[in-house]
Length: 250
Length: 99
Image (cartoon, rainbow over all chains, first blue to last red; front, side, top):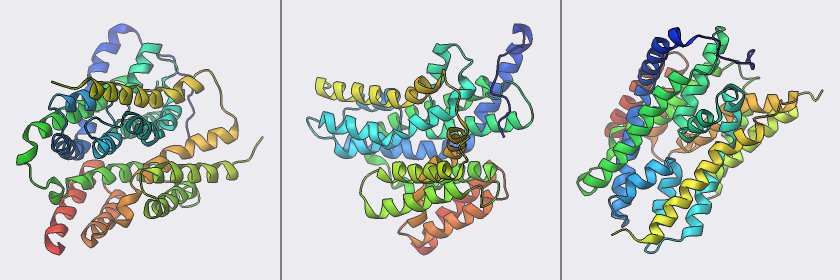
């Protein structure tokens, strides 16, 4: 499905600039549907953080530098004065270990970039920006566009999501106590919705999707049985194991 | 005044997270994958996406489960924005209707 692993940009500078601008714009538009969920979560996180005793300025410091929502919710849940440093850092690494795989999936498509660009792309890789960027890469590869990974599109969508997260967590920290129950309005549902659309876009029938369904089933099971964020690791591992066993070694 | 231990915690969190983000790239940058590893990599995105949203499939509220079902049906047919609007609207309405 992914024919062009070899991807050198052969365009000249002159024609690349306006195209880059339109690609960034396309990325910004592509990220807008996710923004509702990102902002709703950000407001909740910022509000919870100050209620847990974090200084107002610590919130953007954390969400801007760590920039991984799941681990930040966990860290704030564990926060105290003084915070249990090693526990928080360890949990952060575990929850975000899925990034290892996401980065590995992206690697064939960003290998050709200069190293600083690739490392910057990876800093801004959230669940949402990765999913949108990867879906776009598959789409471009399918229609023979080169390179499949559009840096402009990624900059647009990852930038919007980053600013949305940083801005909404900061705002949440500022207006925290006055904020009602954001979840009551249903914005949080945008998060699974986006992921389901991307899965639907990759769908090629139940047989091909078996590893995904195994991943989902095991993740649900572990979520019900084991506290914490283990369900992501366990589900993904089971799905990958299924894919591995099914593939023929050459 | 922000305590130093807070700053250290945040800094180490950021480093741990960035390590997870660049780890896969650093390990695989100079390698080509065998057929099995490639099959695993192709399955990976769907596995991660569905594992992350697994809790939604066993949400305690009936309204949320129905909204998820509606969202799945929408995702199979509609473009992104329409699905997100459907998801948010159905979750909001059903929560108000069913509690």
